[in-house]
Amino acid sequence: MGLYVERYANADKPELVLLHGWGMDSQVWGGFAEALSSYFTLTLIDLPGLGRSTGFPEPYQADAVVDMLVAQVPKRAVWLGWSMGGQVAIEFAAQHPERVQGLITVASNPCFVQRSDWPCAMSEATHQQFEQSLVSNVNKTLQRFIMLQTQGAEAGRDTLKQLKRILKAQAHAAPIQSLQLLREDARPQLAALTMPVMQLFGDKDLLVPSAAAQACGQLSKGEIKVYEGAGHLPFYSHQAEVVDDVVRFVQESIA
Image 1 (tube, rainbow, N blue to C red):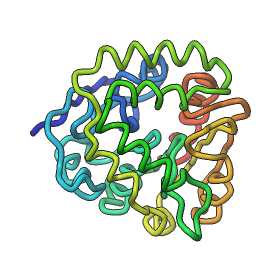
Image 2 (image 1 turned 30 degrees about the horizontal axis):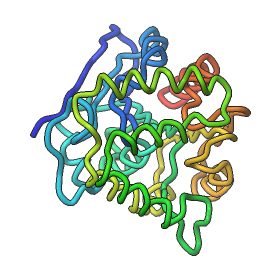
Image 3 (image 1 turned 30 degrees about the vertical axis):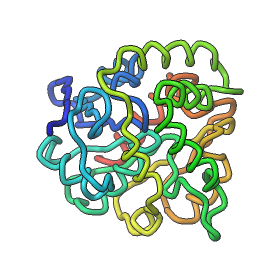
């Protein structure tokens, strides 16, 4: 069992860790990581069982994933997690606050599946449908998933083409066990964080509804931003703007 890790060193620049979302690997960062590499020393990690990382914990839970990450990441860094990666980043920050200078989540929900007190998430029926579909046809499920990420968003067609290329190049398909993590509720951990936090959303996101932005703002005292016209991948459709926001946030966080 091993994690695939890439580092892009940039002397004397702040450390930034990037965690991708479900069904993808760190190739998804593409031009976004390239743009960030001018400002940061980057650590990109394929989450367990996804992309080029082999093996995964069972049950597939955020705290177990954090245990696998500890030895692979810088001693102090700002963390940026997209989608499910945001949930993992929240858990890491909660368990190891001394190692996280600031936290950025992108199109992420601390509670991805609806609960009676958290309606701004995917329905239980939708989550179950993904699980059942993944068992019967992995490739078809992943293709449907990336369509949902881009549908109705600015630059959606171009983004979908790029995601299809990434899926084709991936070493491993997403294990069904990884969907278990999306059932976790990281709201208490998010609310308790004391380091600077910035949460970024897209108002056309079909997987993390924009209503989650307001709800997360009530949980955390950090910065909330919603990109108009963005879907689940604002770092594709609004890349320059997201880069500017990340650079500003990090400068403010470690000042």
